[in-house]
Length: 319
Image 1 (cartoon, helix red, strand yellow):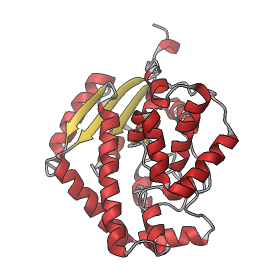
Image 2 (image 1 turned 45 degrees about the vertical axis):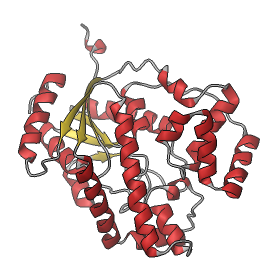
Image 3 (image 1 turned 90 degrees about the horizontal axis):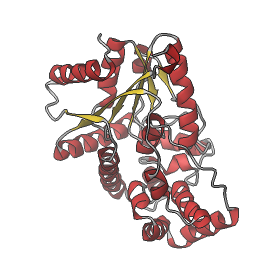
Image 4 (image 1 turned 60 degrees about the vertical axis):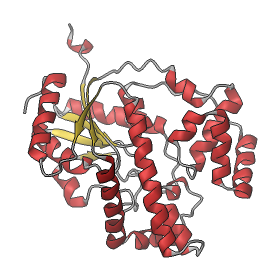
């Protein structure tokens, strides 16, 4: 086998929000000489730190991080852009003798990179998009989500009703091609250009939900409301895709006076639990994932040993 035919190694860590990916990723990156590539659709935005649960500046200083703070919040970031940029980072990291380490919970982004998805040049129909926007303004995002669910229930299941841009794009793909976006994803060959080691973290569902609620309480304490106020002051609005993310749209609704504080927190915790469920559903359908149950949070060393064994087996990569 020639050197050119050898696939570059790619370590991947996935799992639902609040499962403990950040702490584990920092430890593994330090042990294996890795550089972290964020596989999160929201952490690309500057000024959106607390609500996206970014690694702190101190944590980022421990290990090189990529795909964080690369865009202002008015940029319409996409899976195709993520894939292109992440490929470049992987090549660069390899060229410097380091291990690229993809860490994140955005299923489509992670899978599209791992298996080299081909994003079709479907084109666009601006009149159709405007029609969908008017429909959402008149009847609400939930009605738009129901419209997608009626033609493409699988895509609707993986998208939040407030993810307006992606809902409209899924509708637009069907409008232009007559094919459901979920069906287009299914026919991807899913052959990886990388030598993959994908580790998935899971835990008891009740414990995960408890950790989610604790994380949201912590975000509030750390200043999530002030973060949203600052973004609004800078001119970003609820109509920007970034501001429709979990934590941001709920706080905006509170600041606009359409929800009480108690209603805001209840909704945010509920929607985040549902988001975690959708993340797990996506990853459960991915192939090649080696699952590690981290329910026993006090047994971090045992989890590390299990993961070390997986990495050694899949990548032939010892510390």
